[in-house]
Length: 280
Image (cartoon, rainbow, N blue to C red):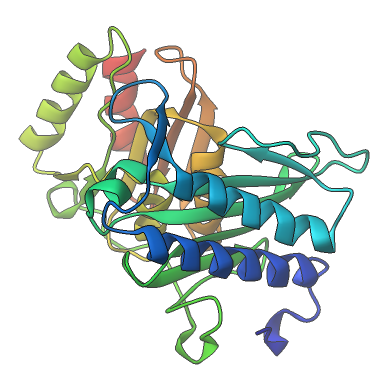
């Protein structure tokens, strides 16, 4: 599975394990795709659900990582029994299925997201949308660049990715998020209206990890949201940075969750200004 260009990386073994875990999760996702997974519960809203597939994917990821690194800790979306702290600051951040609502409805836009950090410093990120999704793997190692391939075991298709060079606002595509946080709808309405008036092309795809990867590979120019969780962003933000993009993450004063603005750097200041105008 592994490849020589990363052999000298301190975290090459962790990358190998992350890719193995992502592939195993992808097999589960494909098995349950198109609405076959039982909905196990809701979170913040009726569309914010988790399924038996989410739980099985997270379990296999945690088991795969723990087999290789038994002392490592985890921050993961679904509630399972695992280590929460590690004395060396080693932590895996897992979103078993980002875009669960899409996944459950048969809309083929969802992924597994796995990141690894040491003392809060992101070292690697893997985002995998399997065969029943968009059939793409995105990954990055810190200071080694960002890449995509067709799957975690098909490195004949591997190629480096970079953010776009688009700098004109009327040529830009912006991914954003619509949420149900109280008091935020009015802000979102005005923000989206302002973006449209300035001829940005807008998309809401409901899978933040994948949207970040689409910025990293130059499909879009920016992703902005005030309602993300750490596991939604951890892998994707590193992939954008390693692809040459610019990323800012902080706690949102609107939702109390993670606020992120990721871009190709060329349109960053303008999109950031709009975000601050309507949300701060």
